[in-house]
Image 1 (tube, rainbow, N blue to C red):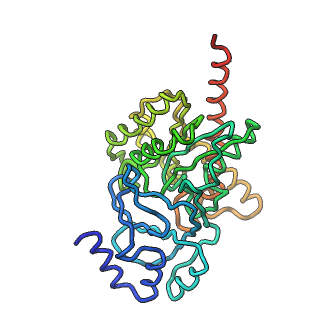
Image 2: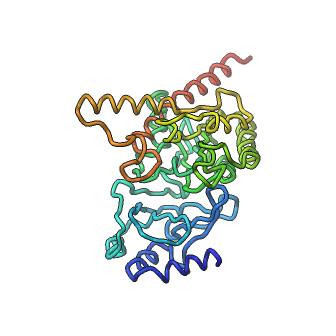
Length: 345
């Protein structure tokens, strides 16, 4: 059975209420967007929020679109499904009779460039591009809470200048799509720095293959990451490769030789251009546990991830911890380059 056929079967087996929701979201057999992502998988995406991209990214967010995440949606399509749906007055009627629950804190908007965040400021004294996947897009958190927005505020505070950070993070993106995103926006935005957020399923469709067994398509991933590195070097633009922490490594056996160690092994970069924020996440988690214990309210799960929503991506707090870790290194890299330019004849 074809993937489109599997979708048609899932739609036919769904009840009238679920079919109504699928049509509202653009997930029905006629309008559902089937595109490759997560290294080697096919994703089912709502065509009301995403659109096809045949220039290398496979798919992209629609410009000027307001949407919200739904959870507890019972759909057995056999495909990884994104239930990021339009946030409009028709939503209440669309979910009536289904088990779907809107995550009220997850509303997101895209700008005229089709990226999450405010309108890009091409005249900002400091501009940066963040490449990445759903960790950077910001799953189940608000527009002001994404890692890119937190990074922008951190740099603005530390450097006392206006900062604009372009967030190209998309659910399902892998290194090839990161490079295509950089190619699509670098000339237009002229960044002063680039941050590459990496995660395990960018090298293998199975989240556990890389962090637990180091199984992944390293040759493929290395090729595209090398393309990003060369592009940044040709622009004399500082860049930073940052693997997103794997939550299981924070509280179990670290196994950093698998992840992110294998990624650092294949990257052709100076050590200063590679940052593992795992220890900063562990410290931040311990601080919250100690604080909670003192108040008699020990946190459930890890407050740096969306554990309470059954999701493994950064919470608003996790985004701030990530931004402080990444921002600290970026400030040092930018200041180093500034001093070098001042001292050059």
